[in-house]
Image 1: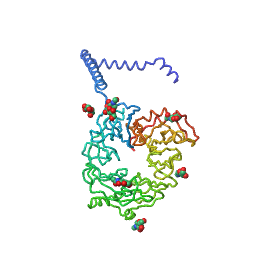
Image 2: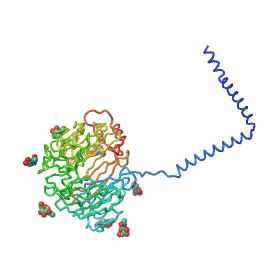
Image 3: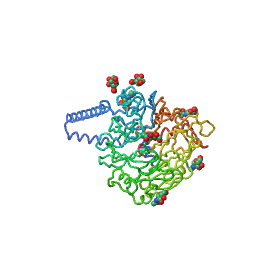
Image 4: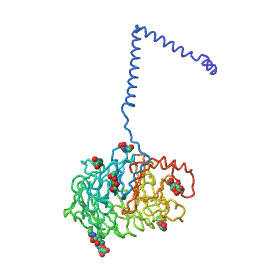
Length: 551
Ligand SMILES: *[C@@H]1O[C@H](CO)[C@@H](O)[C@H](O)[C@H]1NC(C)=O
Ligand SMILES: *[C@@H]1O[C@H](CO)[C@@H](O)[C@H](O)[C@H]1NC(C)=O
Ligand SMILES: *[C@@H]1O[C@H](CO)[C@@H](O)[C@H](O)[C@H]1NC(C)=O
Ligand SMILES: *[C@@H]1O[C@H](CO)[C@@H](O)[C@H](O)[C@H]1NC(C)=O
Ligand SMILES: *[C@@H]1O[C@H](CO)[C@@H](O)[C@H](O)[C@H]1NC(C)=O
Ligand SMILES: *[C@@H]1O[C@H](CO)[C@@H](O)[C@H](O)[C@H]1NC(C)=O
Ligand SMILES: *[C@@H]1O[C@H](CO)[C@@H](O)[C@H](O)[C@H]1NC(C)=O
């Protein structure tokens, strides 16, 4: 039965539709009778046609205007690499990044000591009252290496640090602080190179300035954080406070009363009290900012102190805590509630609670002589990279910051003066890590380290058994950084090379290389036996890495 019906439908497929269209025709004829005027109907359809073509024309016009007449905001093309050379110069361990020409690509600021500047800016040392050679600050475009500004700033530079915030109402958002030799103390606008303020410095010839510069909350109520500079003369550490916006000294210099070393830290306790922490031999020493402020200004306190910390502090020696081994570095790290303190000594690595100063974890049997860096090994979990030992035996350890557990470790022979490791957040909420090491010594340790090439290695936690050798360098490295030049796409490394001694001028070079463009020519180093992927598959995975600008 059903078969017959189907057959009928196949033979007369239009039967039903015929009926329907005939009914429609009938209806239409009836409607036309109702309208009664055929000319009206045709005028209407002409109107419709005109309206249709008019709207089509407008559409096309809009498309034309948008695509040809209104220009797209053109993105400057970033070159894969650029290089700047100064033939007879020396340079300083300093690199700063900032978008200076507002093209949304980071630009590079560096220092060089030279007889005259590059050809495009003919400001000489004599123009600024210095004898030749003198120290220049130069800013170059990150996109193509063209010079943005360059000017002489001092006879010689003793200390430099950038991105010091300025008052909210001022046009500059960041400044570099320079201490010149002899005797100058100035701030320059990072965007133009102009001097914001300049004073003769009170730092004596034998005084060393402890890096980093500390920023303290606004004391002179000008809207900008102020500067605390710690200096060391002989063994004694003193502090001086300067206005961040004018550079004027607030009060006079005051001794901290401790024999400290370098690498001070300004720590804020959970109760809101500011403490200056310093390594002093095998102790962690401290001094409240309130105490120092009272000492240098003689005024009543603007800052708080913490009763618990005052109890722990020995008032005569300023010691807070004993440590096993000599304290080398102090770092503020993100904790579960506020900032904790990572204390690195020559024998251990300890995470201290930011309020109680009790150890959260301790990793013994490590000898760390380089400043640790932070990154992420597992998604969104902070990790710390430490270097255990130096030279041929240097071992890189990646630790979970919350537990101190070792996540990854690898022996990677180092060389004297190797630049510090760096990390860059990736889109998968981990980090890519960049380490310097000797090229030939992975796996073998029979070579003379003096002859070996220095290689830059890249590591990503999703490929834990692989290092990617990105580049070989045989010149003397002064400074190095890996930077995200454009958000999410353009990670590049910047390398500053130059003579090892500041007394013997030579070739100074600044080079930028896009990381992704180095991956195809890189060498894949397999760690251990597992060889699951081909070298090309590994390179592809490194090429596809996306980077993130926020941390
Ligand atoms: C730079 O200095 C050298 C030596 O003092 C001089 O020969 C050269 O002409 C100078 N270059 C510029 C661009 O002034
Ligand atoms: C460079 O020097 C020449 C003559 O010495 C001068 O005319 C010119 O203005 C200078 N250019 C700059 C950018 O200072
Ligand atoms: C370099 O790039 C900047 C923008 O970042 C551009 O203004 C300049 O013209 C470029 N210079 C050269 C030589 O391509
Ligand atoms: C620096 O120290 C040296 C020796 O320690 C001393 O001879 C010299 O006078 C000191 N200079 C200053 C400016 O204090
Ligand atoms: C401070 O340290 C000194 C030297 O170690 C010691 O003699 C003194 O008893 C300590 N003071 C307190 C209050 O612990
Ligand atoms: C650090 O290096 C030393 C010497 O090479 C070694 O004995 C020690 O076990 C290492 N520490 C860790 C945590 O691996
Ligand atoms: C570094 O040099 C070695 C040999 O000297 C070579 O095998 C390796 O491929 C080079 N690496 C890169 C990234 O060019």
